[in-house]
Length: 193
Image 1 (tube, rainbow, N blue to C red):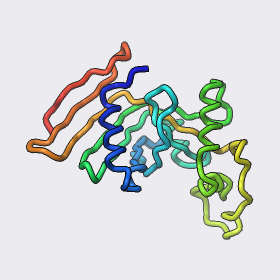
Image 2 (tube, one colour; image 1 turned 135 degrees about the horizontal axis):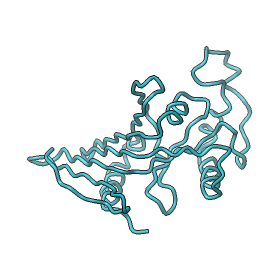
Image 3 (cartoon, helix red, strand yellow; image 1 turned 90 degrees about the horizontal axis):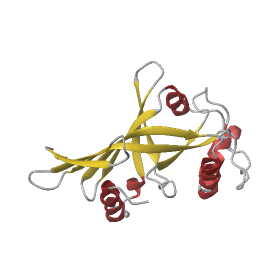
C-alpha cells in the first residue's frame, strides 16, 4: 500500500510533537440521534495495519456508540502545539464490536484489546457510563482477561475521506486539502488559510 500524501505530514507532526503527551489526543465530532453535535476527546491508537484508518477504542454502552450507530460519519480535529498545525480529518466511522463478521477486523479488535494498558482495560468493567453514580466498589472490579475482550469493548476506525491540513506558522499560513475521489485517488489542493 502506498501512503497518501497527507500521511507524511501527519507522521512528521506526530514525531516532532512526541514530547507533548497531549499529541496522542484529538477531538472526534459526531451527530447525535437528535441531530445535535457531539464532541469528545479520544486517544489515537495508531493506524489499522496496511490501511489509512485511524484506531480509537470505545465502550458499546457509551453515548458515543449510539451516535456512531445513528450517523456513521465524523470529523477529527487534531492540533499539534509544537509545530502549530491542525489536521481536520473527515471520514466514515467503522465500529468493530463483539459481533463483527469480518475476520480481519475481529482480529484487529482482539489486538487492540491486548495492546491497551490494564488501567484502560479495567474501565470497560466499570459501571455503565452515563448512568447515575454508584458506589466506589463498582469502579474496583477484578482485572479483565488480557486475551479475551469484554463484550462492550469496541474498536472504532476512522476511514479518512478528506483531510484539511493547516500550518499556522508562516506568512501567510499554509493550508492544503486532500480529498479521496471515487476511484480511491487522493486529490491535493492548496487553498487560502
